[in-house]
Image (cartoon, rainbow, N blue to C red; front, side):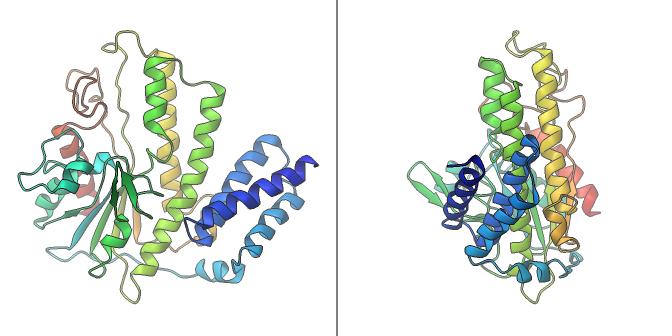
Length: 340
């Protein structure tokens, strides 16, 4: 079988697999993004290849006309009332992993490592309101935000489904993406082996491209689930540099590896920011759709692991490389500054 046809078959199989889990739209975006990234590397992103990918989408029943219509639908952000309905979505950073649980914590709260000292709780306090924190340790945008998340033998329902089950909230904060791009695995590899190889960098780039498709779908879902109501104000956070220097790591991570970790953090933040602002090749199809969403960069400058005043849990703490209480407070303050 010629190589070009083999690639085409692989795309069909991948698209079919994705549509069994997600909508055709997010599957189309993800497959197109992956194909684009791969073929750019191979310098074979020809007009014929583009046509092949579009053919896969059409065969799966996607209406390109519908997607084009979606691109011209604009949505502005709502103004927050004095006591907004606030729901937090995300991963272990938003859950407050490693910090004390609330005294009234449910079994699900414990499984998800949701802390009363997480940034959503601290932000809610600043806003003078309550919060429903649905964030869960290990959550991905695919398995956690969009779809249900499996933790051991327990199924945690889709965070997005639960966020809208009682109507459209006023405020949503979202911290997600690190698990989608296998951040923990990369950091672990840096510590126990050698990271930053060409293969590592290529893998990270592929995961980032797929993440952008999923984030675009998530934002589109927020708009659609809002129905006739103005969408909530949505704040998507970036990620902080977890390590300030290698001085306290016992030589397990080199300065070269630390630079690679920081570069990948930059790439992750760039992927999130570009999706929110619809400045990527794929997300630009939806230009103007995400006016209700804002990217909020998060910085722990001078407060990473190995600094004199670290806002990051150490390797011997319950959740290494996650924010301390001071770190969660810093995230809450940076989000509050964006709101006010």
